[in-house]
Image (cartoon, rainbow, N blue to C red; front, side, top):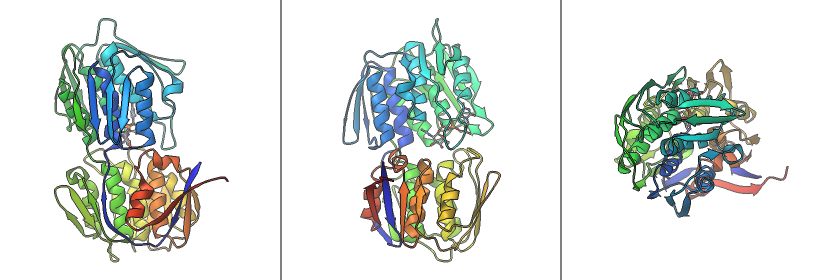
Amino acid sequence: MEKLIVHGGAPLKGRINISGSKNSSLPILAATLLTKDTCTIRRVPDLSDTNYMVRILGELGAEVERASGVVVVKAEKIKSVAPYDLVRKMRASICVLGPLTGRLKKCQVSLPGGCVIGDRPVDLHLKGLEALGAQVTVDGGDISVNAKKGFKGGQMNLMGKHGSTVLGTDNVMMAAVLAKGTTIIEGAAAEPEVEDLANFLIKMGAKIQGAGTNRIVIEGVKELHGAEHTVIPDRIEAGTFLVAGAMLGDGVTLKRVMPEHMKSVTDAMIKCGFPLEITKDSITVRPNPNAKGFDLTTLCYPGFPTDMQAQFCALACVINDSSSITETIFPQRFMHAAEMKRMGANIEIQNATARIRGGAKLKGAPVMASDLRASAALVLAGLVAEGSTEIKRLYHIDRGYEHLDDKLAALGARVERAQDRS
Ligand code: UD1
């Protein structure tokens, strides 16, 4: 296993390019299963999650080639079964459910387990597929979906008690594009990644309206054809570097971003007093020693993203004021807090709210990465801490941040990857 050693205190300065979105790439790669033709997806980030999705496509029978961010898929003949051994390592592999059912009218996909950030049920995915006329059973850890006479358009509401479901909306959209008739998804997730998937499906010949809002209307078509697509920039990677630049920068510029996807994050930073310069495709951030604390609540898009909650906990530690963040999407998602407290952070968790008293001097310590964004928060804390921080279980970061250590080093951070033999 590898670990990341962060030597704190080196100011960050310069420009970096933001990678393509992980959360767009995964369902878009899965969507290539919907056609026999060749699809070309550009700007796919080099991550263990995208590598894993490429492997799943190959195991399902697709021919896949990958070279420097471009993935070419031809899924002429595919299998309808994705067993546990194939999908167990990545929860997001659930997004093959929609395309397999869409294309083959039946499938069997192993049920994903819970994970460290919460329970993570898939009831809304299944409710959506049932509304398209499928018979859905869960047995022996597998989800089986069957629509003997083919899928029919249907109406459903995908709003759950913690908001709408992103991958659930993706799955139902991918099943509905080849259904007979019209499907209406109320309570749909409006995240930019859902809209990006819809844009790819539209290029393949699908008829979709309203993606990017809470009501999506899909007119089923007989078949889809090959298409080319470039995925949108990763707004969470960009947000993470914005926080890094605010914590200890001397001017960090993010290039190749879409600031319109990051408004809740940039608005929150501006409200704290961090100076941002925003252009059409770049954002520059500088620290502010007099920044004010914040009170934030995570919400579905366009609200403040749960995937930025841990990083803002790290930011709150360097603001000489009190802050709070309430988590409504994954109320148990505070694994980073205990590790940051070991570094000297003053964080209290009450129910689903983290209260942070900033200004405490952080000190480097060995810490354990628990999930992707929690790990990113530990890296951020390590960047400002006195001394060295060792972040163990680096594979969590490699799931979702493309070459994080190289990008940080390019900005002047002192970071090194090492084998962890402990
Ligand atoms: C996606 C993102 C993840 C992000 C999350 C919320 C990908 C690959 N991952 O995950 O980074 O943190 O959105 O923005 O895109 N829920 C149910 N029933 C369901 C499905 C979900 O109750 O059938 C609940 C979940 O437990 C959670 C909430 O709905 O409380 C949102 O989850 P969801 O949007 O489905 O997360 P993912 O799509 O898995």
